[in-house]
Amino acid sequence: MNYRDIGERFIRYASINTQSKEGCPSTPSTACQRELAVLLRDELEETGASEIYYDEEHCYVYAAVPGNIPCDEAKLAARSDRDTRRRENNAPVIGLMAHMDTSDAVAGTDFHPRRIDGYDGGDIILNAEQNIILSPQRFPSLEKHIGHSLVVTDGTSVLGGDDKAGIAAIMEVMRFYLTHPEYAHGTIRCCFTPDEEVGNGPLWLDQSHFACDYAYTVDGGDLGQLEYENFNAAGAAIRIRGISTHPGSAKGTMKNALLVAAELAGLLPPMETPYHTEGYEGFYHLESMHGSCDEAEMLYIIRDHDRRRFEERKRGLEKAVLEINRRYGEETAALELRDSYYNMEEKIRPHMHLIDNAVQAMKALGIEPLIGPIRGGTDGCRLSFEGIPCPNLGTGAYHFHSRYEYVSIDEMQKNVELLVRILNRYAHYELDEEAPQI
Picture 1 (tube, rainbow, N blue to C red):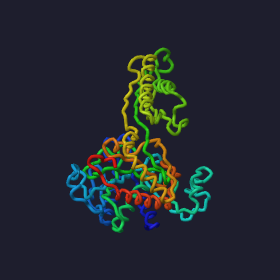
Picture 2: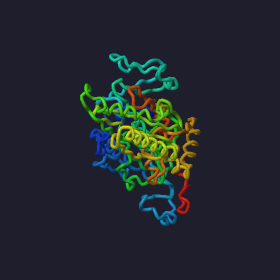
Picture 3: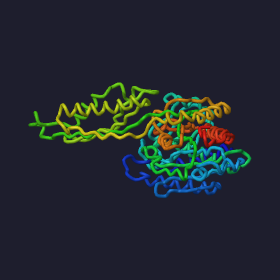
Picture 4: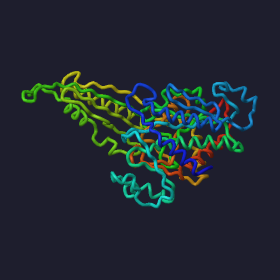
């Protein structure tokens, strides 16, 4: 595998602005994501991948590498899903998925990733003019990357390692198998999605193009991350209706919507916010609050790994709204609550070979498995509930959604080797019509 190739590939992708936009009714939420989608389609065509399809309307890119292992035609003919999965043999069809969009947490339309070879362990000046410095004192993860080749930002934007590091790894896997037919593998399919950062990654995913038995999202941080538990998630919008009058004669009349909103926030547990929680602990997160005396809006996200506590959190927000209406009159506060996704653990548990095979592949490469919960979600969450169990793998990218984001090219390369090892293991499995869990 070509070490420098994956670094150049990543920089090529990271140089394209693909920031998605919250609240947009269309998919993709931003037209700029199409530039990367077209580039990926063209590169897949040049590589010789098959089943290439670009959903131009919704901005999804699909492709496949045909399997090269022997086929038992009698067993294959007996499978009821031979046509829907477009099976070539009896090995499971494995999918790899990453998302093209990046966070808009740092405003900016110009992306200028920079490569640093042989990182020496010191401060990295990202932007001298603005005094933006990536320092191991502030970001200790840098210490384990001394000697690595890194890619960093210029201090004015996110880098986009989330998830262009995943895209680069998957594209390298596709290239590897298409140029090394001596390595055994079943059918491999890939899918690159838009709008994951705004919760709509799998919204228009077409399983006739991504026809898989199992899949992995390649959308994490540390190399070795392996995740099959995630938050149950909901979003809430609370609208406060106030009464605005002249402050000089407001006694007994004015109802300041902003103050009512602040009072509502105070009804929720103060220690159950992202600042105070970690691991499996859930939270209420006030994402934004804006308005005037006359009216205000609060946007919350609710997260918890435990489904029972998740439902309790939603009821807690409903009770807070009812209490505000008791204090200030009916229709003062109105709540819109919508579930976003659920914990995929219940869908992965019957298929723990997905975790076991990844762990064995990591150990063979000297990678320490880092199994833990995702304090967020991935495209694989929803996909798992739509019939394709899909845990998540790390990529070698760090400090997502910030101007201090960076990737280790060494770890990205190791991640490609990990994906190949996992896929090679599945070449030796055989699906059973009666017991498809392997």
